[in-house]
Image (cartoon, rainbow, N blue to C red):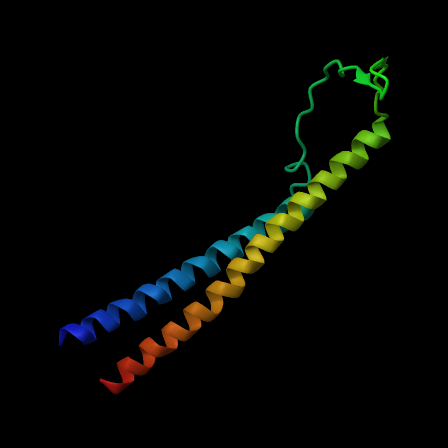
Length: 118
């Protein structure tokens, strides 16, 4: 086998592997998101520690008493945060899938064609 054929073969299999790894990682992330959303629903909740809120300052420089959030507002904030994090995770996993799947399929088909030609 000549040196260029060897390098080409290594390139094809290496990029097939990279594409396959990206597809696997994206698949794992999607499964993780699904499990957190429907099976392990408490996995996204975080422990919140109670602390004294700092006093605010209005435009005139006077201290304003800090308002405490109600339980409904705290829950709404937490739900919004969880939703935003899930959307970020989904976008990242989808991007990996969009890049990884064509990369893998193209190079793997190329490897199969080269194998048939030999």
